[in-house]
Length: 210
Ligand code: VGL
Ligand code: ZN
Image (cartoon, rainbow, N blue to C red; front, side, top):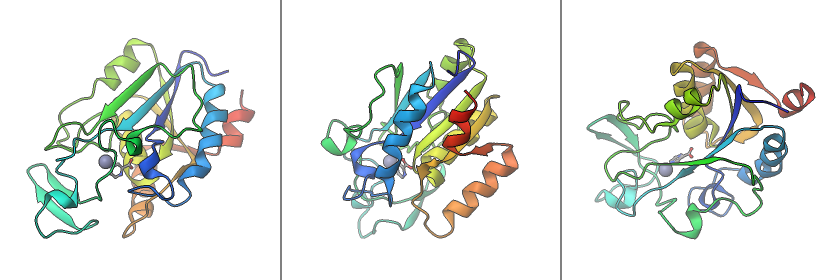
């Protein structure tokens, strides 16, 4: 069992990111049983939920004449325009039914401000507004953050990088993630993670360590 120094962060395992969902991540559903197995080995589990208002700026539908997967320039920089997804309190925003982590302690919702996206569970896309997760984990004495979920190249990568920046040791459990992989985004994410000193492991290795 991973004890009080360790926290498992389960990122955005939500219906809209599953095959058939509004912003489907290929094979996203395959990680659900893996996340369940991992979570059973951690005393401390935190979940995240992408949680947008319907008029959110990250939705192409809210930009006249723009299509999903184009980019626009917003006050805080480049923003990918996504299909409408994870609208607050809709079935698409709900956690996948097969996710069974009854002992998860905290659900961090993010991206709830109309004008600011938040891939990261730690800091919003303006790169200044904290979600409070770093403070929460530090106060609980967590030293290592283990990341899994969706999508590897967006919310998992940004969360892992920000966890590192907040002073945690960070591990991404690669087979417990799936990527959107758009225009080289997955390779770029791994380069950034490697450069930041984020460790990459497989779930069998994590479970074998216990
Ligand atoms: C995500 C794009 C938009 C993710 C969330 O969970 O990786 N990607 N919103
Ligand atoms: Zn989103």
